[in-house]
Amino acid sequence: MYFSYSQKGQALREKLIAFIDEHVYPNESVYHEQLEAQANRFSAIPPILEELKLKAQEADLWNLFLPDSMYVAGLTNLEYAPLFEIMGRSLIAPQILNTKMSKVVIERRNDYLLNATSLQRLGSENDLKGVALFLASASNYVTGDTIVVDGGMAAMI
Image 1 (tube, rainbow, N blue to C red):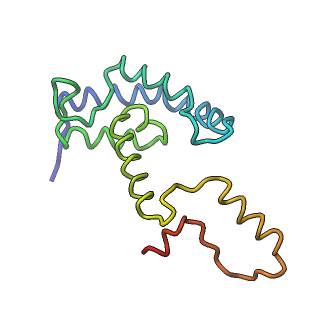
Image 2: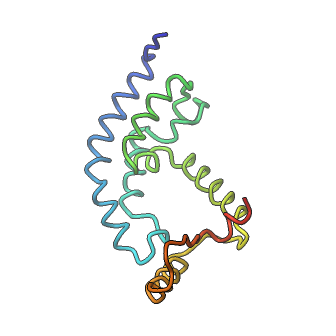
């Protein structure tokens, strides 16, 4: 079966490719630099993402996944799917162009993880540091076992 782009879908596709080529790809390294410069990479959103979100809003490439044309593009699934595939070529594009949906997905994932762990919290860097220190100090005693650092998630499955 052959699917062709609608006029609206083709116009948005071209606009999206141009936006990603001009704004997203050149700033991926900036994003990673800002992320690595933070003390805790989960503590704040790198400023470049907020700048690019504003540019996406100005370009009317914001929340394309919503079907209601009163607020956004009003795309069908057939029109949206190729756009989502283009967004998926970059690690940061979905965060810039699909912010509300990304937020919902992240919130649902975090809720799932919180409910799936017996400790009812997400892990931290210190949790992993403790295991690394233990392994470094007991290296001539621990041989070939697996230490699971998952807040008790494996025990609940």
